[in-house]
Length: 181
Image (cartoon, rainbow, N blue to C red; front, side, top):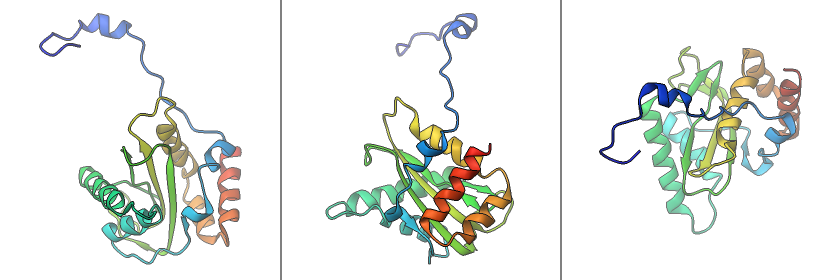
């Protein structure tokens, strides 16, 4: 639409093809974005801003300190719009940013849990930090978020991931949960 131009009539807008919403990923596609060096098995932070900082710190590379600070501020701003805690012990802080060129995922685990403003008012134990590029024609970002929601339909998944002894065991649990859906 051109600025100053009226939107198309409703009937015409309904005839336009609607973009397809991405669905959940296949288990192996989902887990290929999970990396052992982007897994924090024992988060030490106890507050939302600190948790976000701890998750973002995994992304630090020499010379990228300013970018990490900007990503942290972006995530804090996103939390001001509405919490990314979904309930059932899960939070998925996420944003699109020019600071990444592909899907970036960090998983953190807090055994005692963190008050994070979850809708069920329960502490959050599992965090999936998901960053996607501003331009994402394949919609990997949305598909990944959709897959996380699918995996965490029950509280049992949180308990299982909290009991995982290693990164590999956690990934196996996630693959199994997705394969059984």
